[in-house]
Length: 266
Image 1 (cartoon, rainbow, N blue to C red):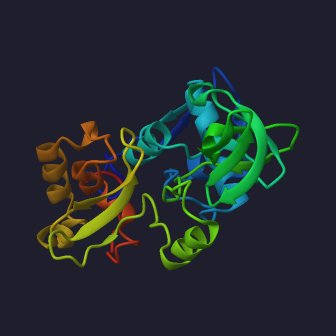
Image 2: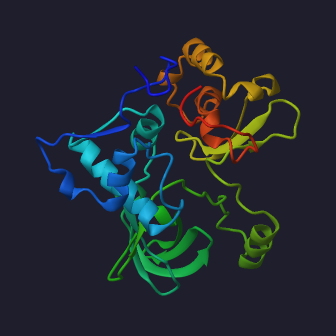
Image 3: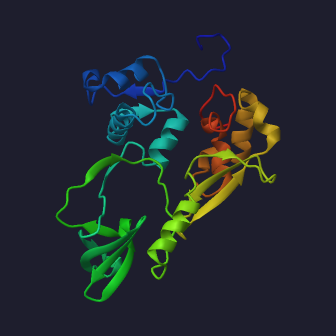
């Protein structure tokens, strides 16, 4: 029986600790609060983007991966299984004069940075000047900065033969679109759009999704259930497809100016 008496609520706990593997005392105050109040991680107690926000996701991810923490909320599971939220990486601010080495797939050449064009680096190697994306370079003898991973912001590709002045002018005229953040689509084709990176082509593409007729049904549990079943939302994991974003529309309600008290699948 649910607490409100409607007999339709999901009474399963969002977070459950396997205390045979670890005591509750190991939990941080934030994660303990979520567990005690049956509050999904996507209804985060900390401000999004804060240190506590990223640390709590990292803690939950670590416990979940070791099967110490059981998570039943579909939205939480989607974040843990489909994104890098809760992981950390090391970034290097590459500057002219730094010694770098390219990854093996790009020849493994090493040399000195002679030009920096946004995310693209020109390196003087024994085979002449070579252009690389910063992600394909390892910086030698330099300490990096630990940063949380979330959505990746892409830079547009630059031509090595393009002058520095031309590159700077183009960069100032056109900013990169926000990746993974749905917005309203004013083109008239669909209700919403989102920019994503195609893992095959490595380029940014626009995914349009949603229709105006469904907006008012986000808070209708029967409509959500029917939509999720009809579109097989639990199997939609490809971020480059409209079905992925349509199934997760309530999660991005605030970004789209919609009112929703639900953050999972439809």
